[in-house]
Structure formats: C-alpha cells, structure tokens
Image 1 (cartoon, helix red, strand yellow):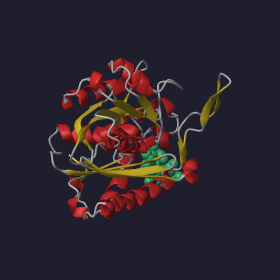
Image 2 (tube, protein in one colour; image 1 turned 60 degrees about the horizontal axis):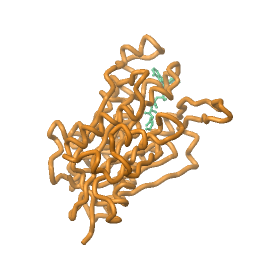
Image 3 (cartoon, protein in one colour; image 1 turned 30 degrees about the vertical axis):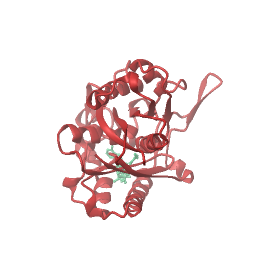
Image 4 (cartoon, helix red, strand yellow; image 1 turned 90 degrees about the vertical axis):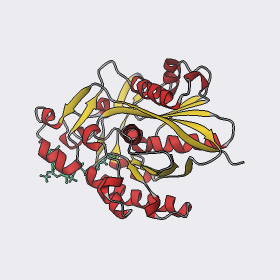
Length: 320
Ligand code: UT7
C-alpha cells in the first residue's frame, strides 16, 4: 500500500504590531500609492523586540495541532523553514520542539528563503512516504524585519513578519500528490543578505539587498514553468486546480502567474495586501487564512508555489 501525507490541520500567527504604508511614509521617502500600485501591499506585521521566529512558530504550531487534533507529544518530526532563525544554532526547530514540549522527535531547519515552506513540505512528504513517520509538523516562520535596512525604501516596504504551520498525517490516499523543487545558485547575487558571523564579529553586510526587476522577471518565469511541470507530472489540466496559493511577494507577480495558468484571480489566495512578503511564512499563512474563512474545503486541489533567494523555487500539488 502506498503511503501518502495529508494536511490535517493548519495554523498561523501574526505579531500584534501593524505597520501601514502610511506609517512608513514618515521613515522613508515613499507613499502608500507607490507601494500599493507596485506591489499590492497595504500593511505588514512587525514582531516585538522580544519575539523571535520560534515564538511566532510556536503560536502557529499550536493552532495547527489543535485543528488537526494532534498532541505535540505525538509528533514524529518537526521541520521549520526559516531564513531568520533565533540564533546561529541550535536550530529554530529544536527551540520550537522544546517550547511545544514535543520530546525526542527529530527536528531540523530548512533554509530555502521564500521557497522554504514548499521545500519543507516536500521534505516532510518524503519522510512520510518512508513509512517511519505518522505526524509531521511543518512550519514557516520569519522575522524579516530584523534583516531589513529600514532606510532603504526599495526593500524595507516589501517585507513583514509572521508564521504558518501545517500538520501532516499518514494517509492511504493523497494528500500531497507530488512536489517539484529547483534551485539555481548562479543567481545568488540578485537577492541576498551578504553577511556572516566570524571570530565574534559580523562580517559583510547582514541586511537584505535585492535587484527588484531581475527578481521579478525570474519569479514570473519559474513560477509558470514549475506549475506546468507539476500538472504534467500528474496528467492534470490547469482547470483541475481549485486554488492557487503562490508565494506572496508582489500582486503583479501573482497576477502574471495566474494568467499563465489561465486562472481567474478569484481562484487565487492572496494575503500580500495585509501581510506583505513574509518569506517562508507566506504560503502557510495564506493557506491557513483560506482554510479558516471556509474558501478551501475538503477534496479540493491546491497548487502551492514558492520562489526566493538562492535562487530556489518549487510547487506542491495538494488534495485537501
Ligand atoms: O520573495 C522574493 C522577493 N522579492 C520579490 O519578489 C520582489 C520582486 N520585485 C518587485 O516586486 C519589484 O521589482 C519592486 C516592487 C521591488 C519594484 O517595482 P518596480 O516596478 O520594478 O520599480 P523599479 O525598481 O523599477 O523602481 C521604479 C522607481 C525608481 O525610481 P527611478 O529610478 O525611476 O527614479 C525607484 O527609485 O521607483 C523608485 N522606488 C520607490 N519610490 C517610492 C523604489 N522603491 C520606492 C518606494 N517608494 N518604496
């Protein structure tokens, strides 16, 4: 019998503090009109100084576990996708495991920037298919506000903080149909945080830098390609997809991707207006939003897509 993973619960968490475009106008030379018309963003959430990725992950995970009816003690694996870990080590997944009270299950982080959740979900699915795991927690959690240059208007208006989580359970029917991951490290330079810790000091510049136009074009191309790849692999037509849940970086990238798939925007989940780009948290945040407001229903087919620094990209087809 083939073993599959099924999403049995979703959860998310956003820090309390909301930073609107209007409020940003006081910090950098920008306008609500510029930000909204170029990106679709109206506001973002920003973590408090004492909130770390593991805290955001904890709140999202508790909600996902509750929705799935799974106790933390019954988890067999925890995977956290994050680019903004609490510290160099231990992993945010290990810190989360302790906070959840999920003793002894393996826990590790995945680093694929904005594709992080898609990479983590694909990884979890492979573990599940091995037959050794029953309940897997997959989390995307980010505090991107910590790695932004708040004086650089070309980047600081684009990102936000948040976390999303899903519980995967073993199932004899899909579930996750397939996942398709890619990377091309030759494009590392167009989106990076070029800093590291060395000899007790930070070397390089540990703040996000991006060539926006190059990232935009790359994202539109690869999101279209990987969606086609996932459909072809499963012998499915574009019309089979009930909901597209793409990485939430820019509404214009999302619209271009939907257009390539021939999908009307009312079949696309968008949260970029309220959350901005929360990197690895953006897809599970959007997923949880639409599960909880009743748009996503059991039996529907979802196309999850991520793209981000590395460059990395990927798609996961999920039957709810
Ligand atoms: O998860 C993946 C991560 N990132 C992304 O997916 C982002 C992908 N890229 C984008 O979303 C877009 O390229 C941006 C939103 C970053 C930029 O939009 P754009 O339409 O490509 O604008 P642009 O970079 O061509 O800039 C147009 C103008 C420039 O002024 P000049 O040189 O034409 O005089 C910028 O200096 O807009 C200026 N500008 C701003 N003006 C007001 C750049 N940022 C701002 C700002 N407010 N915040």
